[in-house]
Image 1: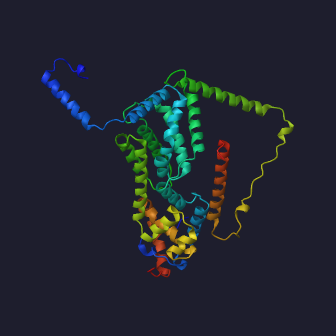
Image 2: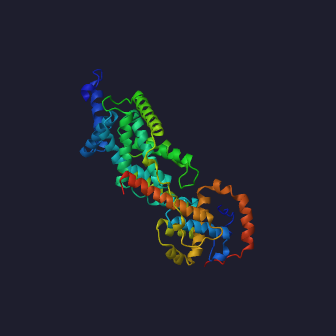
Image 3: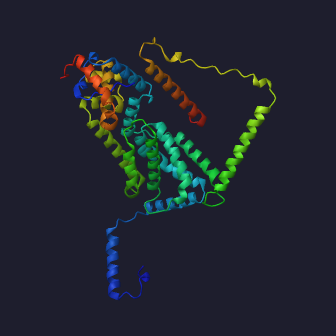
Length: 169
Length: 251
């Protein structure tokens, strides 16, 4: 939980840590970790990131943008027929959506009714430990920072997977 | 052109009209042939996109997307992930509504920018996290966009970026200069933590707390109504601050 924002200006000057509260130091540590990990899981880090984004916005990666355009055009191909003029055909959308849904339902039924095969002996998914993310001993009161670090690392991995799936990394 | 003037005009009126038209054409900036050709090319491209030509639609999105992302969406939404999502949503709306676009002399970009602003507005309303732009700011821009977006996308890009930097400067001007410097050096200039701490004359650990307080001050300045909700809790912290040794002024 973030320490409350004091109402007067007495907290403005800060020259050493003795003038800060333990809650402030914990929140400061969380912010430092979030900045180091380029994470916006922390609310303060997100606000700073928005400041940076407004001050010096970075351009979008060409490959990422191409992928976004292609997804939009693919959706356009589903909803609009180039041979039927400019008016989108809602009936086409409904027919395609219904057909896709029916196909997916049929596939699900077929999958559930198939005879067991050797490939059903699938290795159970191994949950990953987050221990590798921490090199220092755990201390009291640092739960939020540890959770933020895990969330940040997993978010970064998820992004990498997305980029890999889009073929841009 | 005068052949189109109705014949019931008397010759004197015709001469006056011709003189006026000559004056008006002299006052208007001459349309460069390249600009005129570019506008016509874009108009043709939009017409093709409206007719279902995916390549034409792709060309439009490919051309204006980077500008939308960098100047319109990213500054207002505050993160690249949110901006990419908004760009994707913008394109979905363009695909859905391009039929509703009516070509005017201002071109395609102002309409596209307005669509993007509306998407950004929806996102800001839906999210709970504080960023530099508030939903009300973007709503005002949406209302103004139809009449004030420059025709040229480069001009619009420049104007949006200047406005974004001005918003940052305004926010930092509302907090203590020491805090503003901490944020400017560490976040905007991305200097290393140790270097910034040394510049400000504190230890790195103290700088962490200083930066945290700077953000708290910024949050209060940017969104006073959010800061106001912590007033009851602040009473406890004032008691705590009174008990803690007061720091010496950093002359």
